[in-house]
Image (cartoon, rainbow, N blue to C red; front, side):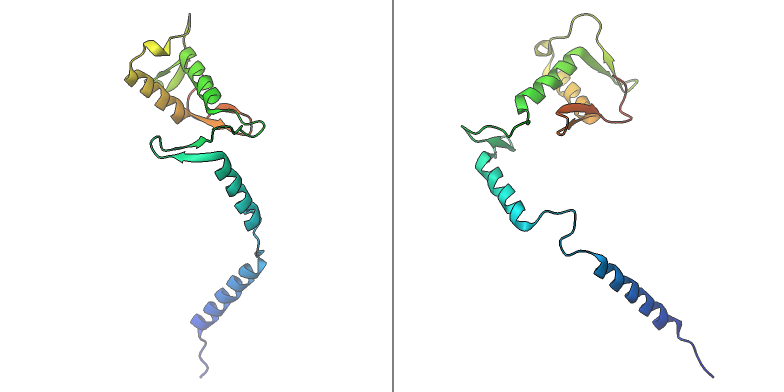
Length: 143
């Protein structure tokens, strides 16, 4: 009587499929840059920035200018603060509501209020480097 062994057959099919997938991948992968280009980018970055352990962030070295088209941190924060002075976050509706009348002065608000408004803003917005603009995330409330 002849017996068919299914397990070795399935195992060999799985190995053949895996081998085909492995051979189909390119050795340099389209998602990553060549190692030399990454090392050059890293060395250029290290020339321009130093890590500040006190503030836990990268700081541009003195005398260096940012690459063309890159806005400074102060400009990005000023744009954020302008939005916060013209809008307030309504926790009940989870939306940003425009302030009628004159813009509010952020310096007169308490630290907790400013911290809460900033946290809400950072939760609902992301900075788009390509467009150099703050973008509202989808589903995070109307402006």
